[in-house]
Image (cartoon, helix red, strand yellow):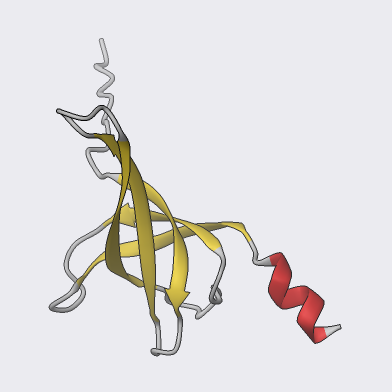
Length: 96
């Protein structure tokens, strides 16, 4: 009798927009979330800026990317680029 063990990943996955890609193998990603104010019931946009590891320097400013939580690569980088969801269309129009 063999036992099958299912492993579930506890790593978080977030989606955000690249705001800086000028560093080598590092991107800066802005995560925006909307929360409801407890008293006034108005939705407020809050942003979080994360540093992520981009091994191939594949992403550019304006791209929508998916990040996965990883072991710390440096002091501020604990996220890695999972995939590029959507490339920035404005950048393509400028080059042509």
